[in-house]
Image 1: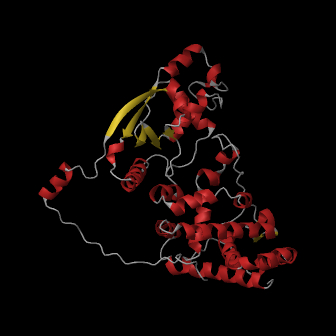
Image 2 (image 1 turned 30 degrees about the vertical axis):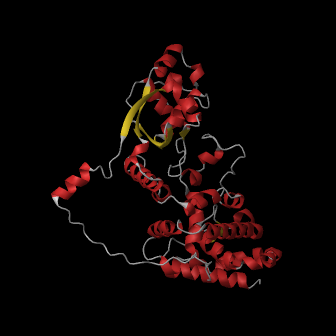
Image 3 (image 1 turned 180 degrees about the vertical axis):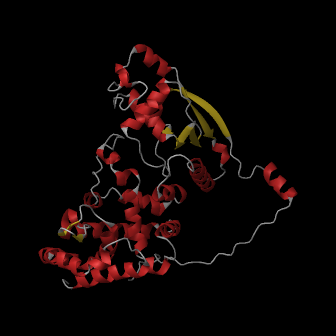
Length: 393
C-alpha cells in the first residue's frame, strides 16, 4: 500500500550507554535542582468546589487526563465518606500560568463533589447512611449539610516555576500523572498512552473519536452541541469512558504500517506508532484525518450500523454477532481506505455487497474467528477483504 508523503516511520536502532556518575557528580545534580518539583499546598472548602470546577482559572480536562469514569453510586460513596469525616487523599494541580491550574489528579473527586452541590444527582447505594439514599444536597438535613460544608479537600500544587520551557512542562506533567496513577484504579492502555504520548496525532485521534459514523458504528452516543455532562449517556458509555474510541482511531492509522513496524504486542506497537506519529506535519495529519473520515463514512454507507459485526457460526446456526469487533474493523477499514477512489462504485453496488457478505464470512470464517492476532492471521484477513471488495470494482 502506498503511504502519504512523510507518513513512513522507520525504526532507528538506539544504542544505550550506561551513565557512570561519581558521587560528586550526583551531589551536584541534586544541588542544582535537576528534575526537582516546586510545590505548595492549599485547602479548599467543599462548598467552593463547584465554583472552582466552573471557573476559567481551573482546567478540568487537560489532554493527558482520563475521562470521567465514576457512576452515581461511586460518587455517592465519596459523599458518604465526607459525611463520616474519612480523610481523602489530596488532589494534584499544575500551575500552567500564574494562578491558572490544570487538574492532574483528582478530577473524579472534584466533579463528584461539584455535581452533588449543583444538585445533579441523588445519593444512592449508601450502606452507613442508608437513610440519606435518594436525597440531593438541598434535601439533606441542615446539620448534615453544615457538616459537609465544613470539610476541606487538600491539594498539592506544582508551581509554574517548576518547568523552564513548555516542552519541559509537558514532560513533567506526563511523568507526574503517570506516577501518581501507578496505584489505585488501573489505567487502560489508551489512557496511559494519552498521558505519556500526548501530541498532535494523539489530539487528532481524540478529535476524530467524536466522528458521527464512528460513534454510530461502535454504538457510542453522539456528542451534543452543548457539550456532555458527566451524567450523559455518552459519558457512561464504556468505550468512551476508557478512551477505547480514541484507540479505534489510532488503530486505523497504525494499521497502515503494521506489517513493516509491528514487532511485538499490539499495545507496544500502538505506543511506538503514536510516539512517532506525533511528529507528523500538520499537512500530513490533515490528509490522514480526511482519509479516516472518508473511510468510516464509506463503511457506514455500504453496510449501515452493522458494518463491523461478524457473521459467525454457533451451535444454533449462523447469526450476526451482537456487537462490532476489531477483527472486522481493522481489515475492513484498511481495505476500504485503499479503495477510497472507488467509493462511488462501491456504494452504488451496496445491495450486491450486502447479499454477498454473509457468504464471505461463511467461506472465510476460520480467518476471523477466535482471538488469533499473529501477523500471518492479520495479513490473511487483509487479503480476504481485498479480494472481496475487488469483485465489485
